[in-house]
Length: 250
Image 1 (cartoon, rainbow, N blue to C red):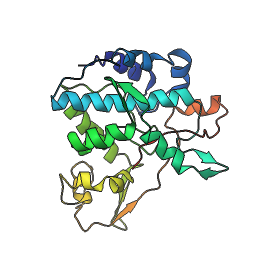
Image 2: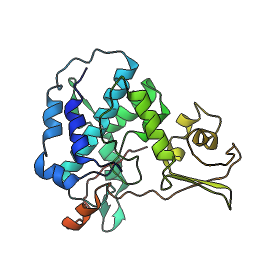
Image 3: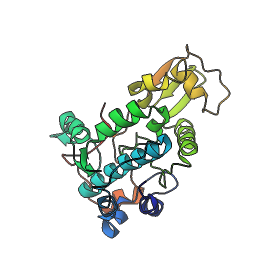
Image 4: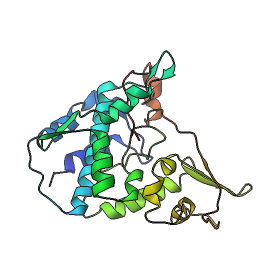
């Protein structure tokens, strides 16, 4: 199994308790640390068939590949590229589909890791609260690596943190409407594998005194594609949209 300690150390150093990333310091101090860590495993034979090991492995790799690409292109304001002020969705989707990441003797894309490995072979809906696209709208980055012996508890913590964050999920008592992050819309079928409806899935974690049922109205929140970064980073750079960013494509 891969040694996750170098990745864990980087996350603890550059990610705060709120999941915000200090890209400025990371790029200045250790811009190549992720690639140097992963280079050790480019020709390594992946042999484990333990689901917990696989789950921790591919979540860590997805996030490491994403953050390493952001560091290459930093500074940038948003992971959604624009051309003449218009969102460039083709470039956005290409970021997730391009096989740019070489490990275990093969090239992988972020989309391949997410859809063909995590979602298909290791079906666990809580991955959607763990893998990050580096935007504010995505799950916040965990300030530490995932480890096989802890990954199920870590995912449970991630689900609770995401669903109890009012910027991601909130219930309006006056209108009796559940407002949700669009991740619940995009990956609805994954959540319905473990609950009869989205409100009932959310009710497993949401700490409010409300009876959420299949008939509870849902409204989806606008998605924030801005880069998830420490606030002071924005003041220290002249940030302009970069024509080649990132985010989980669906």
